[in-house]
Length: 332
Image (cartoon, rainbow, N blue to C red; front, side, top):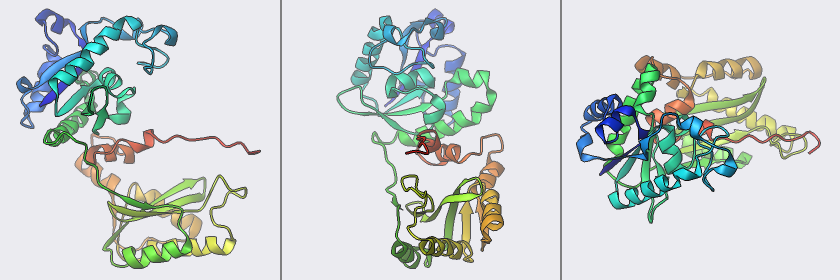
């Protein structure tokens, strides 16, 4: 069973005496129906089952907010007086026992996933753990966000398409992947012999800092890849490889893979290609498939970044939003 969690009642909802009774609900009903999902069969509720004119203005400081919860908006916390609403929501979820919870917008994601920033997590299933067992939550934009920014409509439509598949099972299913990190030269040779030579295509991705490549990733399938690092912030000299000879050998290994005549796959690969050629003299051999350009030809109205593509075509979160950078002082 599908459970739909919105944020709070609109004026239309208040007049009708039920959530999602107005224009947002009608739009959502249409979107769900295109994928064969009947909204009448879903359990519909809100984080706050009441009308709130301006939730952001109602928020308070951390000391006045509900203990243990992150801010609902930047530096703004949910007032403690709303705690009974959250307790009611958690009980409602346990009683409904849904297969999947559709969380509409930032407020619903905050209440169910204890995080804020719907853009970071929309389009991927995550677990709500507020009950006796985890429930699968599928966060996406609230229909009212589409009314404010119409370019979000195809994104919401794509998310509803993914939701229709997630409703078939209660658990989160993600592919098992094997990523080789911190390889030795022997690891590179083994990966080449066992996985790259038999492959018909090779995904290539570089990470750079200025004109320097910090690492290069190669993948022969969605389940298997290897990362070849060239920098290491832990080492005093900043280099991953312990000798210049090792680093040259690793770079020549990467050059050999890039210049193979098999099909290459990359994201915004024109950047990678020109960087490899101009700064390292490495050519890209074989036919090139650029996922950014392919996606843009199919969905020209959508964003084209790699994290966004991951949220559309996989069930992974936008991983670049979840990356944490640490600043290492020179004297450290």
